[in-house]
Length: 237
Ligand SMILES: C[S@@+](CC[C@H](N)C(=O)[O-])C[C@H]1O[C@@H](n2cnc3c(N)ncnc32)[C@H](O)[C@@H]1O
Image 1 (cartoon, rainbow, N blue to C red):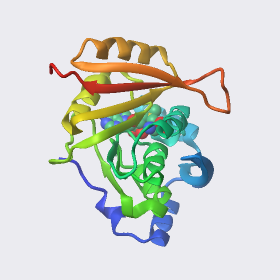
Image 2 (cartoon, rainbow, N blue to C red):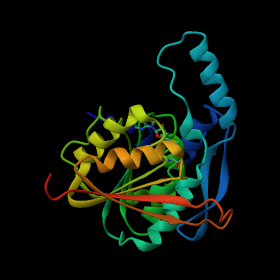
Image 3 (cartoon, rainbow, N blue to C red):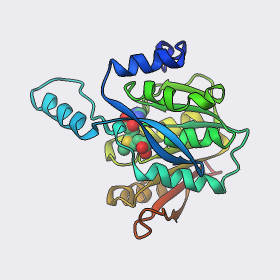
């Protein structure tokens, strides 16, 4: 079962800010989301958090998870931009591995009803803050690939940016997509053309999924576009 972040869901905005202030350093980052200027709550020292996690792992501490959620990845901006092409308004959308929640926030600003999820709970408080303007359309939950299930919930659209970066995650990711994709639904994953994601695309083509790929340029660096991977279940599956 998934654990809803109920500890945060009942708090008002000032209480959320107070709680965030008592955790790690964070700030509001001006960010283009759904083609408008918004702000996203982000960790202020993602590199420091990663170094700290590495130090604790090296010291033998068990269960320390790399805080990859703390960085804002270009793949999220790419998938956000790609949503210009997707009929999303009024639809139920699941974001997996949401990190700072850029993509799910974009989907909500575009009129979708969005469940933003990550495997770790650390980013979820910041996601609550970022999505506060569209909170009536958003739910924020913990969802670990292949471990948790949102009971009985199926989504016609699932989004995930930069969630294909670890080979060992792929089977659990696909399990999660299979568990939550509605019949006839579509998954959109993005990545910055990592070599590992080339391998993912070869791997997924051997599974009962239909796969198509496109790319989208970003204004900050048009020489490094973002790949959009579109998946749907094969009709034979
Ligand atoms: C590279 S970050 C991308 C974050 C965000 N989607 C973005 O593009 O900015 C990968 C995300 O996947 C999440 N993640 C890693 N392993 C996971 C798992 N087993 N289940 C669910 N989420 C996971 C991480 O916590 C992190 O937020």
